[in-house]
Image (cartoon, rainbow, N blue to C red; front, top):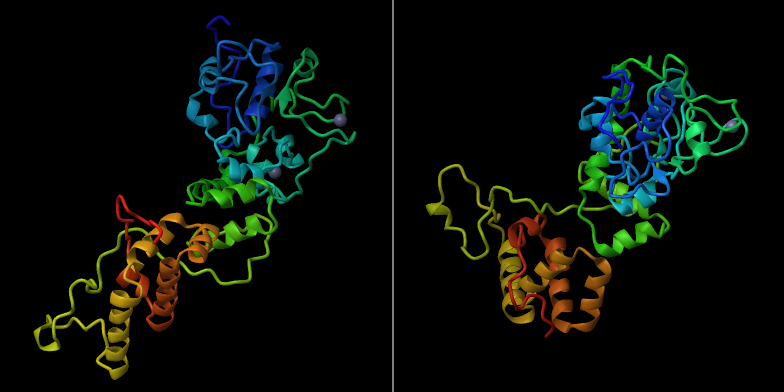
Length: 355
Ligand SMILES: [Zn+2]
Ligand SMILES: [Zn+2]
């Protein structure tokens, strides 16, 4: 393809605008044909996908053809989402808000399955044309390019003569989509076990609800514009993994006696007979009943996989004793995780070896 500029109104790609809609506008304005769009590799693909992934177009080269910056295409597809999020959240076809469409706007975020209505206008999102045909996000044949801009039935146009050049939607209106994009961004960074990914990709029942509930427990607020979901009933407790300022003495260094403590710093341990008994018991358990406990707990934390942990507990008496010690500590001492296992890395070579 020769290096040339397409007919285009620079600055007319609104925030979150979809690659699908922008490519259709470019096709209509320039009467593009297959092979006119810059391919991502040496050869043009047979089918140009424009929604879930931008596998059919070199977006940076396309931006140059339009005179736009590549940054305006940051959310033009949902292709950047990890596969587990995409499999559990994305409808693999364009969904439209007719009010947005009338203003010359469409976003790939409408294909997030938890979005029932347009966050800008509150109108329901639709997946099919008046004729009943679904909207396709791929360009495959000459007919697809020729019909760019409308459904093949001719009764629904994706833009008008004017909005094809520049959408009439106010750019500020797209801020209504900010919470959805921010939530997807944060969800994509969640640390998960491989088994959870697998379950989500296979649409395991309640899998998505569980992840959303867990994300909420971690402080990731669920956007109000998404469909309300049923939160998973069992409470989810959190143990922070990021380093925090040490507030309590390490177990390796016993706290100084009360008369030698710095002024104003209360002891971690209340001076009660029950505390003395608990600490003596805990010391006995650590030294004699579950001497490998720290190593096993480090392995549990490293795994984050309940199924793997249950397998270890089932096959190793040491793992079982470590787990019992862990449960007992949690029941008897609030915040024991921060005292005994804050940010504990698994020991190097011999970590988690069965005994
Ligand atoms: Zn709308
Ligand atoms: Zn139609």
